[in-house]
Image (cartoon, rainbow over all chains, first blue to last red; front, side, top):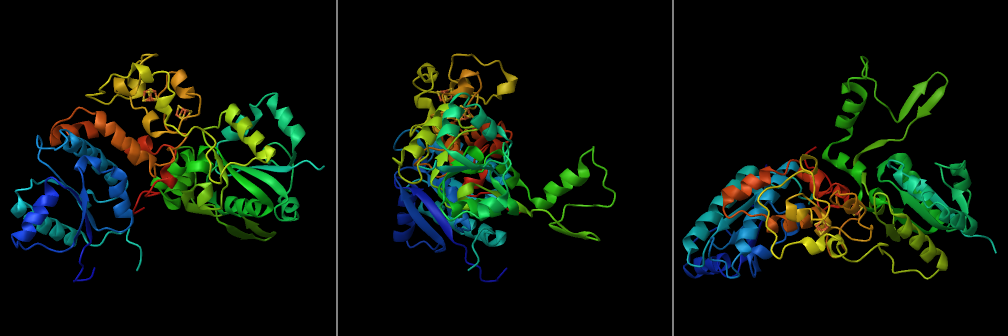
Length: 139
Length: 321
Ligand code: SF4
Ligand code: SF4
């Protein structure tokens, strides 16, 4: 594995919380790696598991999912669904021979810019340790 | 006027789709009357070389069942494609990869080891495995080459229409045959079935509570299912919400939950992921621990979510094997 492997991470983030936290991290000038490609969702509960699988299949080294803390969902229950889908998806990915550590779910509120920056940093470190996604098509 | 020529061919299949043709009962006589069958290995004696000798596109339609898992199947379906105006993927295996497609959790080496070495009834001290070519004093023997990955028909050749199901039910087969013979062709790629999910026509749909919530996942052999109630609402996995309708609710009427043989509806790209999503939404779990616990109750997620569609799922096969 090359020393300077820079993982590509797709981030599916709820606009009411984690996406806003990313904005906050930005305006607060917090340092975090630029490996994440953010995709804004109306709610983490709108994330179809097939999007995550597709991202991995297309060669994303990691997939990050950010939703609101329990009790804070703008639509009441979206994040509860995310939680359950994530648990089953993790089990499926494992059976499919994909390292489930490549997909991470975190609850980050709009006020938690610091948590956002820290989480992304940790996740990028972890993916660097895991190395490139073996599904990545040969360049 | 000469009758239109029709071919029926099988690839990696169980024979059930052939049986489904025979199950047309008296209707089969109508079909046989209307067409000239030029290839049907299970029922009639034709030679591949007769097909090779035919002009291109001289067959009106080839009905091909089974998934594609070896070089002979690949060769013949490519030949039939060349000789046919239309190709119909007949049944779940040709359409989605089907049950043989579950072999995509493994590979050729593992499968051969089990089949030719490890089964209790096999004695193979010299480790002899089938080879594509074997030279013997009398000459050269050949066998089709077995592939690592099972494919659906449209991952091998261009397909015009799909007749879904394990096996396709007689009314849809007749509808398909009549439509194709009428010359009034539907748009290419049409799946000859319903456009809606199975739940919409399921007689048990009306028993669904307004808000479905299940606390545990039950397996059908562990319970005695109520013959009237929606399986899912009872916690018994039923893939109806993520499966195309049109089968006549055959399994449901036999008090068995749906396993998805008609494949996904048009807008869905991955039947298993879609069902996973639908199932998760009705589970009663409010913490990460509770969600994990219920996920653990899904014993065989690949076999459950992709029973018929692993080769046509986004991932197509288990990775790293
Ligand atoms: S989940 Fe199954 S039993 Fe319930 S309505 Fe749908 S197809 Fe019928
Ligand atoms: S109920 Fe489901 S598995 Fe049974 S025939 Fe219909 S689509 Fe296929």
